[in-house]
Amino acid sequence: MEQPRGLPIQQAHSTAGTVGDWLRRRSLGWRRSAARDKGELFLGQRRIYILPTGPGMGFGALLLVLLIGSINYNLGLGFALTFLALSCALVDMVLTWRNLAHLRLKPVRAAPVFAGQEASFELQLVNTTARERWAVWIDVASAGEARHVVDVAALGSTTVRLALPTETRGWLEAPRLTLSTRFPLGLFRAWSYWRPDLSTLVYPFPEEGAPPLPHGADGSADGAGGAGADDFAGVRPYRPGDPLRRLAWRQIARLDPADGGQLATKHFEGGARDELLLDLTSLPPHLDLELRLSRMTRWVLDAEGRALPYAFRLGGDENANYPAASGAAHAAACLRALALYGRGTQ
Image (cartoon, rainbow, N blue to C red; front, side, top):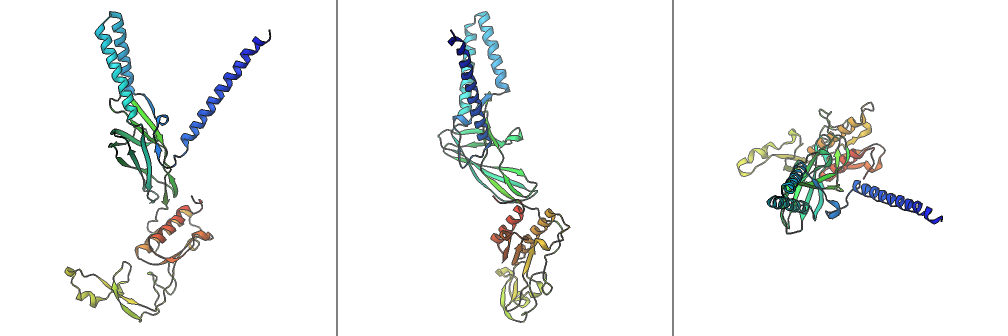
């Protein structure tokens, strides 16, 4: 006699367990949706959502009116029209879903920029099927209405570049994106979320009106010392940053610009060269840290623009101290250190 009383309790525990399991699965799915998609993403059935649009809801209300009118007046042609229109809507729903299904999404690259500029994330949509994909909209999920629309040819691919504003230095990760389509009739909207595993480095903004490059007491602003100036070694082509006083005017006068002539500079050997040192600790301590990093950024660009070898130091950070050098790789390492100073690395 006591057994029947226990059945509802067991059923209640079973129901509670089922609801709890469902909530745990949903929370796991939500956490996964917030995580980054490593590598290439395949849009399978579970990644695509679809709902009627505003016009689709209006079309459904029209079908309901047609159905009620056909029932009330027993109209055979009304039934035929209603179910024909309903069939078209169902076909449109399938085609809208298929317009996104089985696309492959690839993150390509994102070039470093300076703070205040727009970061460009390059993404690729790959279609490995024989069906062409039309009017696929893509943009940042928080942007509301998408701004970029692309078509993807059958067995082809399309590249999309999304621009994002930058404000502060450091790593900038690609935001969560939304891909959507309403093709072909616009009665349904299919969409999917994508968070590519892609990031770019934002350098400090170069200070405007920064002081000239630092130099030693015996050196000049171009980083060259005065010793050994009489050790003439020859003539070489002019390079940006060479002092005007070292131009080889006699050789320049003999060259005809029409024959491809160019400026030439006297080259000296044996002279001492004061090392150009860009040191963060040498800047006035009362300046804001971001302003000092901005000034260092400007000096790195100025030294590179004048082809001057320079050493680089960021105080006690041994990993951000580089010997004198020049070139794109040296500049990139210095700018990276400035961007990540005090913020760790990735």
